[in-house]
Amino acid sequence: MSNESPQSRLARIRNQLEISGQAHLLKHWDRLNDRQRDELLGDIEQINFAALKGLVNDYVLSGKGFRLPTEIRPVEVYPARPGIDLVGKYADALKRGVALIKAGKVAAFTVAGGQGTRLGFDGPKGAFRISPIRQKPLFQLFAEGIRGSNRRYGADVPWYIMTSPQNDRATREFFAENGYFGLRPERVRFFTQGVMPAFGRDGRILLDQPHRVAFSPDGHGGSLLALKRSGCLAEMAAAGVEVISYFQVDNPLVSVVDPLFLGLHAITGSEMSSKVIPKVDDLERVGNFVIGDGRTMVVEYSDLPEELARARDERGNRLYDAGSIAIHAIDRRFVERLTADEATFALPWHRAVKKVPFVNDAGVRVEPAEPNAIKLEAFIFDAIPLAGQPLVLQTVRSEEFSPVKNDRGVDSAETARRDMVLRAAAWLDGAGYPVPRRADGTPDGLYEISPLLALDAGHLREVLLEPPPMVRGGDVYLE
Image 1 (cartoon, helix red, strand yellow):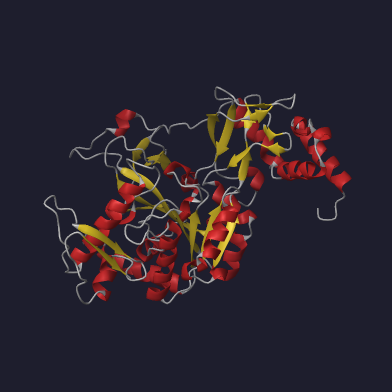
Image 2 (tube, one colour):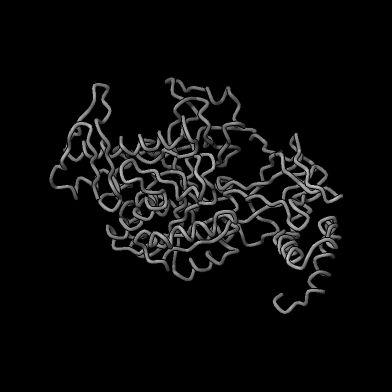
């Protein structure tokens, strides 16, 4: 469309809007200046008109929602630590995972579209400083995880980071200001998350301003579409990347490229694999992995009936105990298949009724007192039922999961820093260097281990050959 005249561009867009029943988006056209008109047309061109009618009919007007499967059974889970029957398989998987990383067949992928608003932080969530001693931001921890993996395995793992329209510029500037945390800039690829328009209950797209469409992020499931639209998926294919190591930006304990997990994914022929943890209680607010009508899937905590959430087996163990932590290994070819036709994007949309400010037909911006709009999001876990041979691997919460979501209380910066200290202390204990403890058993002091030194407890045992200086109440930082 680069040679299209302004007149033909307007005519094309006006025709699309009339056909789709959204002509009201140009209602205030005559009041706009040239810059505002260009911004409005640019917004409208982001709308997927091929899929619009189906979205409005299925999710806005009819209120289509999640339907619980008819038959629900517990999912089969690979254990965090193998029994005698799986020792050989895990050893083979570890070798395969290391080989994939060394051969450049693995890419790290971070979903980082969120802002730090809930943390009381003005900026991209990935720029939030979280480590207990050096106050490293989340992005730096992940960068050091990649650098540590590169060093350990003789690799050069590329890192794909999905931003949002709200934080893309700030994220890029943050990396530039910090020298990409020691990574080569050409190995860090930013791309922007897709957006979806907000709809009124009548199916009409809302305007945020007379010249701007009311958009919101299209969810972490939209990351798959964004990979394709940005050209990143094609770049991965050209570079020989076969497996995408997916994780979200709010988890400082994540293993950015886990060779065991990647290897199990590969040797079992899985197209999409997931890590899970045992739940802390029946009603923990995490997704639940189940077998629903014969397919591996995630049922949100709000959708799982309480009688199932509390169900026990004959030994008294929780029957549905595989909690989702949003860590996945995804085959690149699987993503290509899911996104082959954007008009029929394979993942379902999730409907949420929200309060969204809008411009009415008189051109007045309205701040609604009650929910007035439908927002649509796609969730990454909805790809799992569509994958071949999906694998579920249990991991240890204290090793790999402590999300930073809230400014205080559960899943907060305080709990994440606490868990980083506890993990570092446990690694030192395991390496034969017991840390000083308080009467309640907690570490007496702060402990932080950079991924540049060790990626896991076993790695620390290999590289730490003498005890670090430790005193009660002191800080111990190892790099």
